[in-house]
Amino acid sequence: MPERICPMCGRSSREVEFIGSLCKDCFVKKYGIARLPEQVEVTYCTSCHAHRTSGRWSDPYQSLEESLTDYLEAYLANKVKPVEPLESVGIDGVRLELQGGTATAYVDLEGSYGDVKVKGTAVVKVMLKPTLCPVCSSRKTGEGYTAVVQLRSYPRSISKVKHLSERVQRIVASIGDDIVKVEERKEGLDVYVREHSAARVLATRLRSEFNAKVIETYKGRGDRLKLYVSVRLATVSPGDVLEVDGTPYFYMGDSQNGLLLINLETGKRAVMTPDELWDQGFKLYEGQNLERMMLLSRQGNRYVLVGDEGSIEVPSDQVEAFTETVNEGDHFLVYLSRRRIYLVRREE
Image 1 (tube, rainbow, N blue to C red):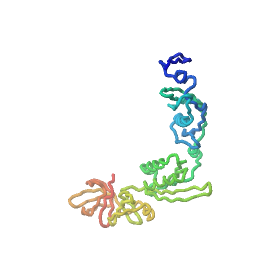
Image 2 (cartoon, helix red, strand yellow):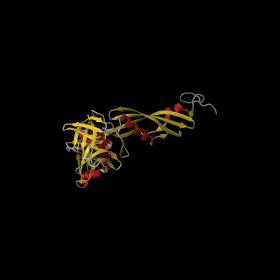
Image 3 (spheres, rainbow, N blue to C red):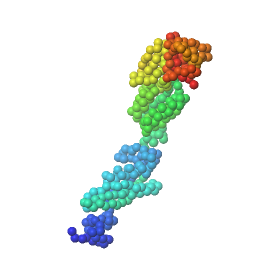
Image 4 (tube, helix red, strand yellow):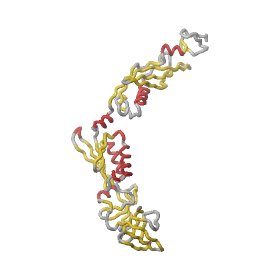
């Protein structure tokens, strides 16, 4: 093949690859690599930096630059066309220069003509249209919700038990952008939610975590019809002594079928579903059979326990401990049934 000379720079085909009659570098200088829109308009949220694409909003972004870069890379990928005679072209990256209400995008391109590879940069003006996305607008105005999840607790207040409060906040936060606002009430929390489905997801998670009672009602009419989900959290923990329908139970823990309980009068174990617990009525046991006592001695087959009301001495086979270890000098919450003594839990 005869040697070619580039008419623009004078280099020969021995020095550099050619595209048509020009060396590849002069070809890029004269014709560029691709045809791109000279100007692009981007609608974005001033609060969360999400951008709108084809009528739909993206997820939030940490920064506006990151949001615009993702939008431009996706948008321009569908618009870029190689200049002839290049056979293909692709976007190698987008660099942004923000300038108030506009931005300049430097689009790095890479094209090919047979075995010849070329690179170049195109400049695209970006017109920015700031607004609020529906989620942020709802949060700012307090409107835009279709459901309210009303969290209440019994027998303990959520706010008074730190680990319970943290668990509730974690579960509420799990539905993220669906939350319009959260209002603290004296009796609990009201969570305003954009969609019915998200409200039900939240209620289901709380029911699973807290053995909650869930009741749905509707209020309003037409466009103002709202779903209200009452979620009553059973704020009890393993180790509690509960009174259910007048009977004292030790709460051991949870299973797939419900709460594991021990009847402190009969010693029998039972499994109770959350619905059964709520329907039968329960509270923290506060009867006279529950007392704080110290194990004074444990000799032979006898236990000696001392409390505010005096001391008791009982055979060891009439004592059942729900703690891993039982040592002299330890203080326990003790339940005194008619048939045996239960060391319910260790007390500090």
